Amino acid sequence: MDMSDLMQNDAPGAPEKDEELLLDDWASALAEQNGNEAPAAAAGVFQPLSKAAAPSTRNDIDMILDIPVQMTVELGRTKIAIRNLLQLAQGSVVELDGLAGEPMDVLVNGCLIAQGEVVVVNDKFGIRLTDIITPSERIRKLNR
Image (cartoon, rainbow, N blue to C red):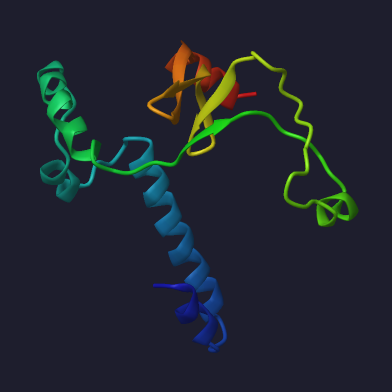
């Protein structure tokens, strides 16, 4: 029974029956959630978690290794008024909050993962990672 069934029922006394049925559905769902009543169908669908499943975790990560992510190296940031932005031309200099020689942030999908310094190899710019943010530090920053 869905909400459209409840709305279409115009018979007197019917909304009370529908409320009772809806409350029964909620009660059974809550009981199921609390573990009082485990559905029989779910038993065959979900595999139990065990220590034996841990070695296959390494194989599972292989499935996501080819997913592309956006990596950004950030030199610095600044706020600029639209008036000043429209006046920028070729050769204009924009002051950033980062200092020369200061480590740059390396972000993956907008999340800080490392800091590093600029290097030039064969006339191409790159970044040498100097500090990797640990997963626990990243999670701690997300919780703030």
